[in-house]
Length: 73
Image (cartoon, rainbow, N blue to C red):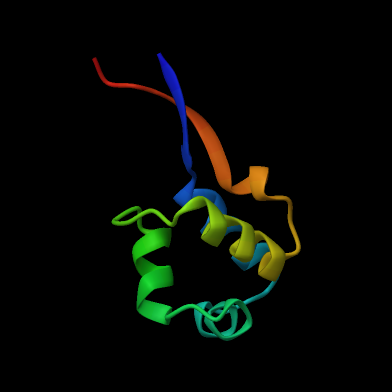
């Protein structure tokens, strides 16, 4: 079975490709820098609304920040 999940590696990759520091993305997105760090390291996952906000701040489509993942069973 597959499910959609937040792709924390894509968040960091796209942020770096855009030349944004974590501090700058925090400012642009209105999110806390420490929270962004937890998302980028996979320790936490943002909700769908927040994924949309991050995508807007990064100038990408929200689907760039999600992936299909196989469930552990």
